[in-house]
Length: 257
Ligand SMILES: Cc1cc2nc3c(=O)[nH]c(=O)nc-3n(C[C@H](O)[C@H](O)[C@H](O)COP(=O)(O)O)c2cc1C
Image 1 (cartoon, rainbow, N blue to C red):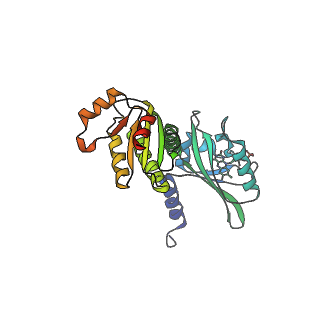
Image 2 (cartoon, protein in one colour):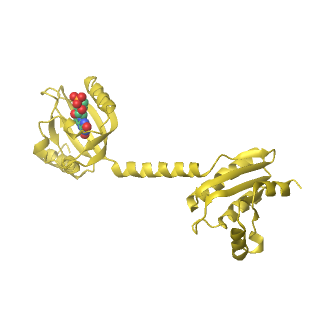
Image 3 (spheres, rainbow, N blue to C red):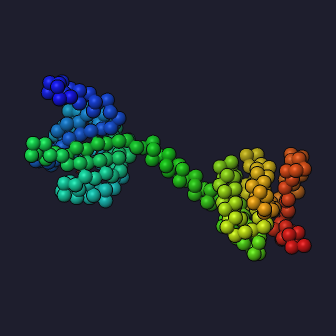
């Protein structure tokens, strides 16, 4: 860059900033209310405001009813102390639609004059994905009541709700961990509270049974209706046969025989 003329350098830097995915603004804290003195194109596109609509204004115009007062306090303090800061803040576009803004603010001194540089990244989609993952995880937790040892070498887990493949995988992992840790010989899975759908076929349990068998443990499925047991006989070959019982008591009687 050094060999280029100053004007060329500025144009190149501006083109870089405008081509970036990150909104960038500069504010001047020596002017009244620390207004924006530069905004790149990305900031304009992200917020829906034209550049000349934002120059001269403090950036708080992006805040609205759901913006956390705590986060605003944090920003105010950092600016006062001339410290760097990174927060995620609820902001609003010109048309009123909200978005999650990952905001980084940093003080910069150029030729002995202080400025603040702010970079904004719209992380709304990322955040929605995270929320969806969390909701799913708590669904999985809700599905499984705690695994309990009802005899020194026997554990039970009761399932409630509807099963899908992801939940089955979670159950497999959780149960295998428990069986290994507590040296369980017999694991009972009670499905009385399970909503029966075509998406949660009984034969999935054979995979868990197989994983447990490798670990030297037996698996029993209790709460199985005669109709479901009948379906299994049709769908599974002999080797994959599950041990099914109508109640936990019946399975226990068999184990303790
Ligand atoms: C460089 C810079 C960038 C900023 N960018 C944003 C932003 O994108 N969104 C936002 O809600 N606030 C932003 N702010 C914060 C507000 O301008 C203001 O400092 C904050 O609301 C706290 O001050 P107040 O309590 O006077 O409103 C930025 C501040 C600075 C200095």
